[in-house]
Amino acid sequence: MKYYLVAGEASGDLHGANLMKALKLEDPTATFRYFGGDKMQAEGGELVKHYADMAFMGFTEVLFNLRTIFKNLKACKADILAYRPEALILIDFPGFNLKIAEFAKQQGIKVCYYISPKVWAWNQKRVLKIKRIVDQMFCILPFEVSFYKEWGMEVNYVGNPLLDEIGQFVPNPNFRADNQLSDKPIVALLPGSRKQEIERLLPDMLAVVSQFSDYQFVIGAAPTFSEQYYQQYINERPANLVFSQTYQLLHHAHAALVASGTATLETALFKVPQVVLYRGGNVSVAIARLLVKIRFIALVNLIMDREVVKELIQEDCNVALIAKNLKLVTEGEGRVKMLADYEELAIKMGSAGASQRTAKLIVDALK
Image 1 (cartoon, rainbow, N blue to C red):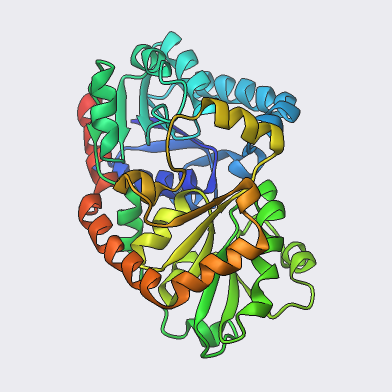
Image 2 (tube, rainbow, N blue to C red):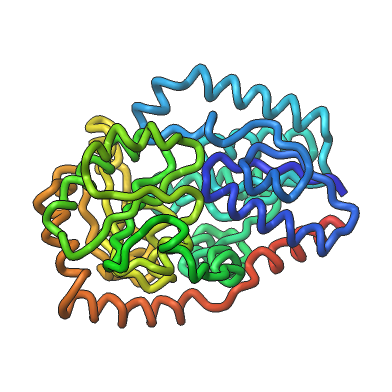
């Protein structure tokens, strides 16, 4: 059968690749076209557009890039019509994918949504639209099932696909030597994969380096940017770069500074104490504060329904508070408590197999 996938971010590329791998096991005849990235491309099929040309962060950034977004939407719709897949599989990325879902539903194409939009965070009435245009919803956060049920929609809880990826991880015992790293404990810097995130967070992450001389700082760099791009922020600071080795970095890390997003949950599952950072455009954040209905932004805290990791947002995301909170997770009681909370989180998350469960449900429904 023919499958069309749409992933608009690095995390979607990762989960899309694992889902494609699982679909090939469930359906040996599977063929793919997709908007995605390098990981999906490694699984075969045809990459139509790379997510690097699609990911815009925040309300104002989206507004300034509307022409590009509409162009991408038009191209995606035309390509789906030309391909006529048995199933359209949309992965997170709701601003784009809900428009594609509505279009595909009108064309009689089965719409599957893998990794629910965060409708529980703001504009919850979007669930009514989702009920109308999505045939199957596959959720990866435990609390989403009860949320959708309150709106009269039955969804599938399949577990979290990060557990699949982490389950396949093989540590490299030569990681330090391969990357010219010393024996000092590592503080991982994960400033995100979007240009706006990196520009807003990495300078302040690096500004605390001089206060932690007993540690070495290593940046988990996104493959979509060059070494020269990162060097403009590093300058003469003693910080190292590693590209496309985030899990290796987390496996060897003692602590981390992490941009809000999927990486916060990955960091927790690798049992690395962390501080979560977020800084957006002033207008975007002002709008979000009016609309968003949740107490936390970090996935770890949302799943646990309490503060496990410290969130430094907007004006709190400054050098002084970053340094203060990083110290709390590198040593002492704060570190011990966070590691204990991570053990409880692991129990809540359950077992690996989200990709396989999702693939089976999709193929069974098509049959």
